[in-house]
Structure formats: structure tokens, C-alpha cells
Image (cartoon, rainbow, N blue to C red; front, side, top):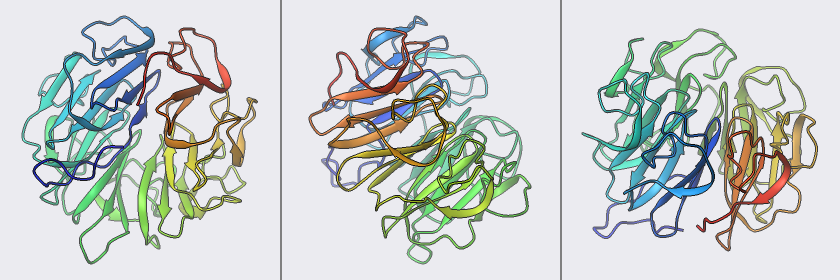
Length: 368
């Protein structure tokens, strides 16, 4: 794991050592490098090409990274000095370079001093900064940038009226942030698209400004899928809300919920992650459970049966990080190994093949 403080005493960004998009995966090496594999049609692997990779390769020239995030076809990374770099598909400005041209090499987004967390949604990106502000850029047709408009932006804009936050989660067409202002710590605010109740209110209306998720307190971590969110509470319980057509809320039903519901039959969790329409939790004993859509085996239980409550990922122990993609999942273990399972159409499982795996398979040539 990376230390909590940089060499100058400033806090390092919080976030994952693994991230997964629509058809690609990225991992943060122990030396601060980033390695990606899978689909590369839009430059999302950051190696200067648009050729798919069936095994991991480095993001060219990028180092000193503390946290990574993947959108559908782009990625962003927060560095140990608090900067943010993005690369990949850029049709809505989600790379933050002020253009709509794809980036096959990383671009350092200007004006983002001391990022505490970074997030990549379907087609937008966000960063929570040390000055207490949160800034977003890219697609904004449903208000997911939170600046009060529905106008896309190729450069960062300030999220309006959001209290101080140190963690942000970007989803398909909405965004959520964990409040850390000394007064409302552990509460969550969301904005953007709301077709399935993913903003946590009963209005079913898109919101261009952040709104609190009613009744949600004591949250310590967030994870967002396409149209659902989950929060890890200080007690270790996990609550989820939003779309639930595949059981991704984990409460035993397939009914959407516009308010947080408790994930059923889940012992206390230590980490959470969300894919397109599935969710996973690392337990305190370092095992992994997942629930929701399982069409390609992304739950890792050896089947392709959807699960509305958590199931154990087969044969995986000592898990220290997990990431959910569209239809695949990856996890890192304490010895630095990486395993992936689910869809592998573009090589996103990193095992040198394009064969799906319903149980974890080791990734070749990367060590965290």
C-alpha cells in the first residue's frame, strides 16, 4: 500500500489500486506506475497506440501515481503530488484537455491542486481537492458535472454548493460525494441523472446541483455503478440505492430503490466496489463477495446466474483491492497478484486470451 502522506507532509489521494472500464482494466504498481490491458480502441491503455492488449502494458511515461479510476473508455490517475492525469476517449471532454480529441497518451489536467480523490464515470471525470472543492469535466447532459448547467465541459468546472468532500464517485450519468466538512461528516450528496432513483430521493428528477441522500449517515466509502450506488458505513454494513434490475442492490429483490437499502446476509465489509450493474465487497477476513448481474461470470462464483444477494468469489483469499468493470471484475491479493474474471472479449482479464472466466484467473505480468 502507498503511505497516507507524501514526502512534504500533505495527504495522499485516496482511491483504488485497481480500476476497470467497459472492456479494459488498469492496475497501480508498487512503484507508482500504471499498467493497463484489454480494449484500446480509444487509447484507454495509454501506450500511444489503439491496439488491444491481452496482457498488461505500462501507461507510457506516467509515474508517481497514488490512485486510479476508470470510466467506460477513459481513465484518470491522481499523483502523489496531487495532480490529475487522464487519457483515452474524449468525445465529451472527459480527459480535461479542452478538446474533443482522444488521447492515446496521458494528459495532465491543469488547475487541479492537491487532488484527494479522483473518479471517472461513463463519460465524465471528477476530483475532490484539498481546498474543499470538487471539480468535474466531460459529459453534462443530465447535470452530472454539478455546476448548475447541462452543458458539457472539456475543462474542470466547480461543483456548486457541495460541502467539503474528500471522496467522489462518478457513475454512468450521475455523481456522488462523501461529505467531510466537520459538521455533516459521513453524509452523501448526489447529482445528475435520476431515472432509477440513483440520487437517493423520490423525485425521479435529474438534478444539476448536489442534494443530500436522505437518511444516510456514517458513510466512510462510496462506490457507483451505472445507475446505482453503495455506501460502506462505519459499522461495516453496506447500503445501496438506485437501479436494481439485476439485483445489484443486494437486498434480495430486483426492484429499484430511491432510498438506501441494506445489503442482505453480508458480514461486516472492509471495502466496496461497483461495476455496471454488479457490486462487490471485501470482508474483514480478506475474502470477497459479489452480487447483481452475472451474465459473463463477473460475480466469480462459477456460474452465469444473476444473484440478488452476495455470493462468495470462488477460491480467492487475502484480497486487498477490488474493481468492477462493465461485465468483469478484478481483485488484488496481499502478495501483489492480480486476478480477473467475467467477460474477456477484448482481453480485459489480462491472461493472454479472449476466453471468459466465471472464476478468478491470474493476470500475467503485473505485480502490485
